[in-house]
Image (cartoon, rainbow, N blue to C red):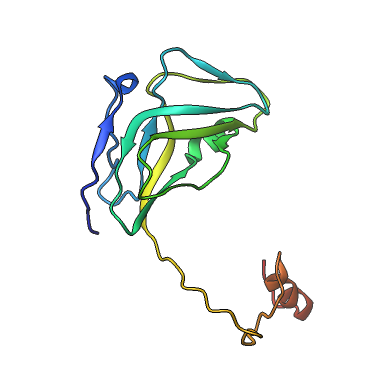
Length: 159
């Protein structure tokens, strides 16, 4: 596993909060914390932008993906609305997390609460080449569950 240095600026409202860190040696992501002054209550069905108190300068060729925390999703129905949210390498603003409450009870976000994960990942930019026709494949144009439907019809299982 490799590490790359990423410049990070702690914003004034992030003072006193821990910097992102990997919980274990093989963790893929770091926790983002809520950099809020007062509790924020998310009613069922409500979404809000929660500040993290940090800004980052990613190396060229990388992105940061903001992802839900599985415990919040399972226990409270709270998740990241645009998951995964992408932070581009040239963005220099605050990392924000759009949380939504899909649960059936209000959920309170407190200062310093772990609200999302952030994963740094490599990026490939495509060079587009327009063609008249695409090459055939075994799957063809089937989508939205089509890979399991042929297996079900043949009686071999599938998703």
